[in-house]
Structures are given as C-alpha cells and as structure tokens.
Length: 204
Image (cartoon, rainbow, N blue to C red; front, side):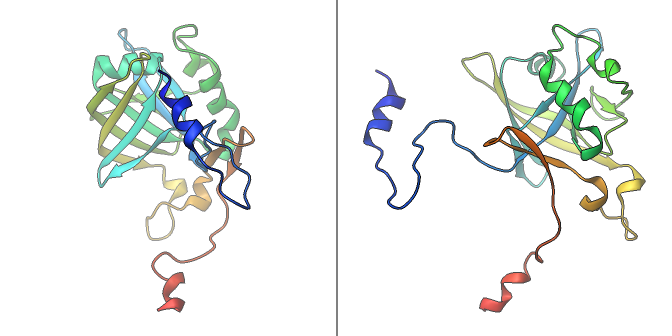
C-alpha cells in the first residue's frame, strides 16, 4: 500500500490559493551550509547541504542522503559546518555537483585549503569565514543509505573580517547565501527589516 498516495487522495484544496499537495514542498529559504569531513585516509571532503537547522542551544541537525560525507561522519563521528557566501558561490556549488567518491581532491581542485580542527576529527576550510566544529552525537540511519545527523557544536570561530566593532558576527560582512528551492537558485541574505523582540511591540 502506497501511504503517500493514500494521504494525497484525502487532501483537500485550500480555497483561494494555488494548491500543490505533497509534491516537492518548498521550505524557504534554506541555508547553504558546507559540511567538511575527513575520509579513511584523512583526505578532506566537502559538500553543500540545505536540509539543516539549529535544533538546540548547542545542537544542529542535518539530513543527508547516500554521500561520501555521510560515510565519513559515520567513520569519525565528527564534521565541521561553514556557510557559503556571495564570494564563493561557484566553489560551494561545485561541492554539490561532484561526489568525493569520484573526485577525492575536490577541495583542492577549487583552490581551497584546510586546517585540521583542534577539537574534532574534521577539517576547517580556511576560505569560509564562519565555521562550527561538531561532534556527531546522534546518527539516525535511514533506509536509503542516508542518515539524520545531530551534531553538538563544541566550538565556533570566525575570521575577524566579518566582526563588527563589538566583536559580533555581522551578516552584512559575511554575506551568506540561501537556496531558493522554488527556482533552484542561490539568493543573498538581504537587508535588516526589523528588530527582533522589538518590531512587534507596537501591538502591545
């Protein structure tokens, strides 16, 4: 019995809107994170991923398919997460085009270099200016060879070029990108449009 088809047959349209059902739901924007790992020969690998998010004060979660990255996380129980930016769109996209199984030197191929993390068994890609060092504390296996991975952030570091005068991360300086799943394009994070825990006070 195909459960998805059964559910789809019972879904009713929302009046006054274009309805898409269950087909390729768009959750947007999606982060463009770069997951870096070491393989069995301590060769650095990297992939771009969008299905990720923060799930606790010091926890992040990523959903991965059958990838070299997934194998490496199972092996070392560690990975780093960096953020693709406007200045490295092409390099970051390349990390999603080719597999580390086929191109084991793909980090070097784009001209990037790595520094071993001092805290986990994973590489830090120097050209990305904001990086989280993570221990894999949960690896929930999925039937397709992929896994849902929960990482504990044990340290995060930033290049001083993206810090403001108070030493805070300034996204206007970092210029991260997001993935627009509807158009399959990358978009830059835009301007500030309001103050968190402030803009809504007009309704109090």
